[in-house]
Image (cartoon, rainbow, N blue to C red; front, side, top):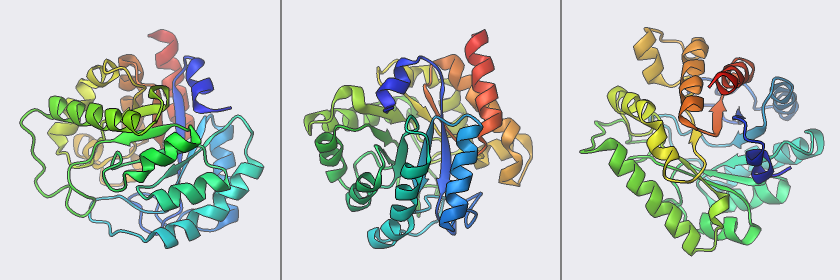
Length: 274
């Protein structure tokens, strides 16, 4: 089953995070072993994940870039094993900004591209999505992971991010990506202050109204901890579920989360009572 088929089901989709990195902000090093990674992905599917998102490079604030070669080493064999093991109806997404990594991942069995730079890091991501006729997630980030939390500022956070996403979506379409294969993500926590993130959460419908399916990635983000006075990211399950409910109410279609089961429950209850 592909993403378009899932989206036609008109239910919130849960994208389970599988970080194959030693340094991601809340689960770095947890799933480096291939067997462990596959078993964790299967667990997420049992708990209700519709998509598994695999990444080989951390994009936490202050993280350093990882070469395409190293990313491929981290993700290629895992994706291949996942595609042989996961149910056929569960698509695999590759979380990368590099077209070389994305190409290797697609050859291994991935069928969604998730780019936190929306094609700005490597515009060949557009060509790959077009050539393979597969979905492309375009996310907004101010700056880079190394610089994005160094005093981010906006004159109009909603307007500027919306304009950027529309601009990148149009570039993708001009490169041959079908409009139905474009997903947008406002980039919670990527070059935003706590107040910016709260304003984005309060105005998610503005992004839904642009006309593309919206992905929300607020899971365990630091601003949630600042609101709830919690410093341990893994303890932000309840706060993340609150963002999922708000997203469902606004019309967000995909939720990228670390903790699948509670967010699946939150999304389903919000959807059926909305």
